[in-house]
Each structure stands twice: as C-alpha cells, then as structure tokens.
Image (cartoon, rainbow, N blue to C red):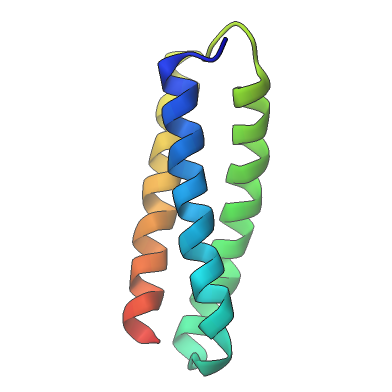
Amino acid sequence: SMTDFQERLEKQVDGLRRVRDEIEVQLHLAGREASDLWGRLEKDWQSLEGRVKVVVDESEGVAEDVGNTLTQAADQLREGYQRIKKLL
C-alpha cells in the first residue's frame, strides 16, 4: 500500500494539475511574460509528473532525499503558477 508520503505527494500533484489546467484554458489571454514563464514551467511539470508517477508506483516507499526533492519541485511549480495567475 502507498505510504502517507506517497499519498500526500499524489494529492499535491493532483492539486497542481488542476491549477495548471485552469491556467491553460486562460493562456490565450496571457501576455509575453506569462507565456514565457508557462513555457519554462511546462518543462518542470513534465519532469515532476514523470518522476512522481515512478515514486507513487514504487512499492517500498520513497527515500527521504528523493521525497524532499519532489516536494520542493512541486512547491516551486506552485509558486510559478501563482505568478502566472497574477499576470493573467
């Protein structure tokens, strides 16, 4: 079964996915700055999503350093998405 950490990580990424989807719908309204930021964040999102999928599927749980790295990446993405939302 998934560890608490894996469940929290999955919830965190699901939350990010919802915010990302909201932004994507409004992106045609975005100016240059928001569009550029979106482009950079998309690379980070693809990377995070792929890594989280591996970690969540991992049966033995997650090494603490890996968990911390993913949590930090998710936090940075959230901050980036918040910046974009202010620009929209």
